[in-house]
Length: 619
Image (cartoon, rainbow, N blue to C red; front, top):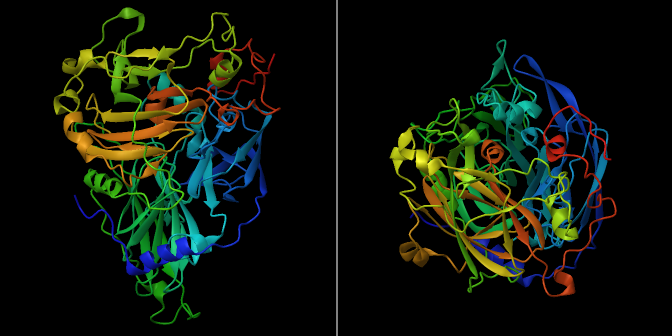
C-alpha cells in the first residue's frame, strides 16, 4: 500500500503546541435558525426548473456552531411535499427524536405545517451537513453544518487557516425531484441529472445558447492557507476533487480529525465530508477546481459523466485589469483528472485515513459482543409468487438489499417506529395488528463467490442469488453492545461501491479490501490502534469494509446506503438500541412538540411518507 500519511515538521510542532496549550473555555450558546421550505423557479441551461429550497438559497443556510452549543431549527413547510430534515453525522446523543427520518423517528412535516428541531452539539468538531431525508429532495435541500472547537480556531490540531470555505459538490436536475421516487416505483429508471455543481453553480463546462454558465470562484491571497470543508451532496456519484497546481493536506473526515497527509486529489462519496488545507503557493494566476465522478466500468450500467469546475483565482495588487501581464488575462490551468472508471484512487484515499491521537479520542473496544456479515447488492422480487429471471423486465421489479432483505415500511403503519418502541404501542398500524418487523440476519442466506464478475450481466446465472424479501428489517442491540460488522459489496447485477451511513453513531473503520472477505486472513490486518472514525463508510467496488461500533446511544437509528437510488430500492435497515441500566443511559421522553403515539393512527404510512401534493391533516 502507498504511504499512509505524510506529516510535516510544522504540523507536528503545531500538534505538540495544541496539547500543551489550555485556552479558557467559551460559554455555550443557543443557536437559532428558521428554515422556510418553499419552491422557486431557477433558470439553468436555458430552462426554468421548479426547485425546493430553504430560505430561497441553494445550497441552503450554513449552520455554524461551537462544540457544546444547543441548536434550535424551526422548519416552516411552505412546499407541497412532506418534509423532514436530517442532521447528517450529528450524533444526537440521547436525542433520537430529532434525527429527522420520516416514519422512523418522526411524522413528516406536512405542507403548511411547522416543526422545531432541538439539537445538542457535544463531543464533536468539524464538518457535517444537513439535508432533507425524503426521496430525491436532498439534491436541493441541503447545507453545511460546521462545528468549531470550544476554544476557538487557535486550538485546531493543524495550522490555523486564513479562511474556511465550504465546498459542496452537488448535481442539477431539470425535473421536479418530488417525482423521482414515483417514477422509480413505476420502473421509469431513466431520470438523470443534467449537470454537476460546486456550491450551487454549474461552471463553464456548460453553456446556454453559447454563453457559459457561471462557476464558483474562490479568491485567494498568495501564501495564505485555506481550510476547504468538502461535502458530497450528490444523489448517486462519488467525486474526485482537484485544484490545478495545488496540493491538499487532509486533516479531518466526517467531523473526526485524522493524521494529516498530503495528496493532490480528494475522493468523497455521497454523505461523506473531508476537511483539507490548501496553501495558495502557486504562481499568481487562475486555476481550475474540478470535480469528476467515478463509476464502475462495463458491463455495469453506464451513466453520463457530469464534470463540474470552479476557479481558484489569485488576488493581485494590480487593479488595472487591461494591463499586460494581469493574471486575470491568463489562461486557467486545468488539473489532470483520474479516469472515470478509476476506483483505485478512491480505495487508497480512504485507506490512508487514520485517526489523530488526542487525549479525548475514543479508544477502540477490544472485546466484541456480536458479529455480522452484510452483503450489499441488487436483487429482485416477483409479485404474486411468479418466477423471474430478469430485473426490471416484464414481471420482475428491482431491489437493493442487505443480506437479501429489501427495506420497506409497512403500508399500514400509523406511528413512527421510534414511537412504537418508546411507548410500547399495542396498536401500531391502522389494521390494529401492530407493526410487523423482520430481524436483519447476521449473514446472507447462502454463501457464494460474492465478487464473481460472471454475476454482473443480467442473466439466469444469478437468478437464485437475487431472491429478495421485502420487509421492515430491524436489528435490536442491548445497550453497550460492541458490534463488529463486515460490509461485503457483491457483483450481483452491478459492481458499484456503497457509502453506508449509520445514524447516531460513528464507526471505527478497521480495514478494507478487494474481493471476498476472509476472516481467517483479514482479521490480522485490522487497525486497532488508530482507525478512522466515520459516520459514512465507503464499501469499495467488489470489495469489503470491516467496521466496529458501540451501541451506546438509545433509540431507533437508520442504517442505509447514501446512493439515493439504492436507498429507494431498499438498501437499508433499522438498528434499535435498547435503554441502558442507569438514568443517563435511558432515552428521555420526546419534546413537547412531538406528536404522541397514535396521534395520527387513522392515517397510513404511504399517505404520510410518499412525496405527493396531497395535504393530509392529522385526525
